[in-house]
Length: 278
Image (cartoon, rainbow, N blue to C red; front, side):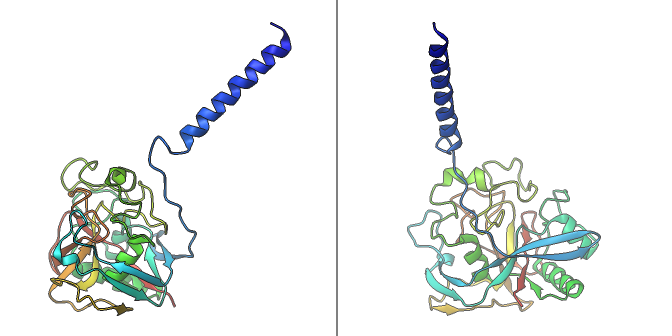
């Protein structure tokens, strides 16, 4: 075969290989990452060369709760209703880690030990104390997010049960849950899975995240503007997002809610901090 024919044959083979590679990288053979917006960041100094990164969540409106047709729906998630947040706020990129908690509180109560694992076995009261101490250290208003803020940030502009869509089959790409976590109560280091559209990791799964609000049998259904949650140190509080002990269609959904007493500690419950945008 003449030299020019060899060159043509090689070029065709290379083009075919390139097409094949392009097809593989397109994500058609697996789940695609959601498009992450670039948001303004804030870094809080916990001391001991430990920091917490937060992103500025934009103001906006969303539909809170779930419809009765959503698989896993509970009455506690009803009625679905519109909430308006007129002010932006900062929210932690990850759940508070054991390293961050220990730098502020001087102890680590967690069951599954690991510096980069989320702190757990922590009560609502101690989560609030962490926020208070970090506020003193930084001069910022650090707090637990209101339940509305949490769900708004979790959904990140979506209305599906999960921020990646309506397919529970993609759960393992975005979250640690019962299907991939391993043993009961076994948490995993934060930010190993893909983030949501606002760059927040583990909003679903790994550990439940405590919020400011008291438990309620149902939402009142009225339109709400800038609800702040109930930070009073009494009653039953709420945790959000599911954990390593639940399946995708159970508590590992954007709308799911878990009641927890203010002094109760569970192996699967931690928290994420919020901060006022000043």
